[in-house]
Length: 79
Image: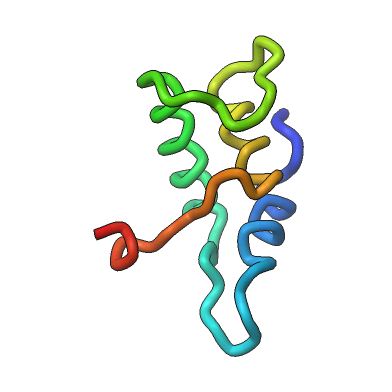
């Protein structure tokens, strides 16, 4: 099992959202997609933003999100 849990990740990602704004991540599915996308970037050669200590790309991606080293943006912001 990967720690922190998806609920902890959702809290961290949504912690920067101001009152009245829509949360960045609204479901487990969204946080899983974002984490998987970052893991694929690491596999493709992007440098890890946290100390990897031989961890697998998915564990690194989870840690990066939890430590707010990467930010999830919506489709509109991406373009």
